[in-house]
Amino acid sequence: MLETILPMVITILIGFITTVLLIPPVSKFMFKHGIIGIDVHKLDRPKIPELCGITIVLGVTVSGIIFSFFYPEQNMWILAFISSTLIAAIVGILDRITKIGPRLKPVLVALGAIPIIFLAVYNPYPEFPFIGVTRLTIIYPLLIPIALAVTANSVNMLDVFNGSMTGTCSIAILGMIICMLMMGRVDAAALAAGLLGSLLAFHIFNKYPAKIFAGDVGSLFIGASIGVLAIYGRIEVAAITAMMPHIMNAFYGLATVGRLYERKEISNRPIRVLEDGRLDVNKDSKAPITLARMILAQRPLKEFEVTRRMFILSAVSAILAVFTQLLIIWC
Image (cartoon, rainbow, N blue to C red):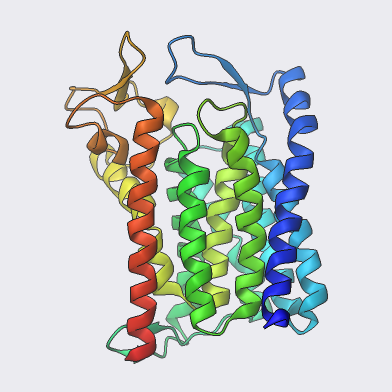
């Protein structure tokens, strides 16, 4: 039992501690050098240090290296994980510097699939409820870049409020870890625990009222990490279920706009700030339909009340993911 728990405890602590220690100097550096974002959902529109998601990248990478000491037989997988997720992080940094654009960005993130495919660490036999094991030897490697692009982009699109991305992803990853343990994938759970620890540390500073922003480097890295972990842990269907709030938010946004887009490109923003600081929906029919807009459809809410409802939806999805994995095991 101790051999099962110890790696998870250590990786989650390493991810948490590394991120906590890095956040103060990194946030000061970003603010000093003008790498800031505007908190548009506040009346005073405060300037917040951005690109601080690099602390998550470093925290998860360090925890991944520690993970390799516990599971040396998984060194090929840890190499694939670190390589794939770092590609997504680099895309996030490049987008900040050069403005890659909404169409090219997911394509570049999809390149993170190359290490997984090249090292042939994936298992092309996913399991589905009521169907069981399926053979997708040809299709599966073609789906990997799509999976990374979808998870990274969907996480990025839900990074709209203080703590919304870090909180919902933490809940989703916790559900995924439970599913991995149910499958006996203790190694995958230990690797995922490092990401959870780093996210929890970041959430302390990113929750309402936010002191730091993750930026694309953080959201793309986290989304890609979730995609890779789903493949590594062989819980692809459960992971999709756990990520349903993120996926549906991205789907409705893309469907209403009709193309891939950056938030800054949208003149009719889905949310507006009232004079009392509460958030309300934009009544303009041209404004994108998003998860936040649907939550606010009934009445205006404070920002932290919106994120709280997002957390509840993510918790429901995580529970459904666990039940989905149970169906796979029982069937």
